Image (cartoon, rainbow, N blue to C red; front, side):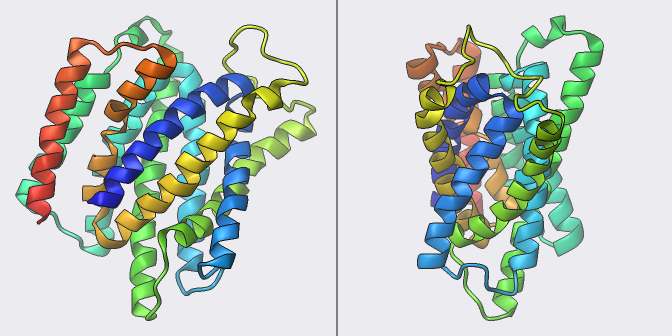
Length: 306
């Protein structure tokens, strides 16, 4: 359970820094830049201390990255400007767990006990209570439907990517191999960079290096934009795709995704103190009540897993 909790905290930091980064660079460029930097950092680890690009599970980890890092994050960054961060995170975190559990049950035959299913449902209910937004009701129907569809696709990407990672670890175990979380994250992110690079190539060929769906905050364009955003880019890459995914892969190595993902689903709640100090976003009573309910669910899930 420890690596899942560590991943949750790191993903919270990544979400806050990613929100700031996307406002400066735009969705597609921010996503590609942080994946590229994270790939370089993970490559240093994997080729120095890990197994690099070796292992029987490499093709499966690569495919997991194509779906999770690639298609999932592309959909995520298209949902954000349409329906906002809170509704997007709600859809992704709450739907990824049942998607993954159902897929793993059908494909890998992994079953969960009734107590584990109940605890997971309590966690998701708490997350939904805490972060369910109200302001999306004023959005045009077409924008809302399109954004929700992208959010569902992002949840599918995250859930299916997690299941493929579980399958990759099974493949490695059958081959008598052991792979650490950072190396697994490196092998996954290569697929993500490939998929994320396709929209950037398309934009470059069309002569548009900035995302048309970017969220503008004042007059932030100009040659100094990379200098101002470099710190957030480093924090986002380290907390998300490097250390965060490393802990995430560590958790999936030993624990079914139907248990890992509900814990990671509490990320919107862990964001609350970070958002309060960095973005001055004060949580309401509903957020605090939902957080307490989610924590109760996590405690129940931990006891049930034991």
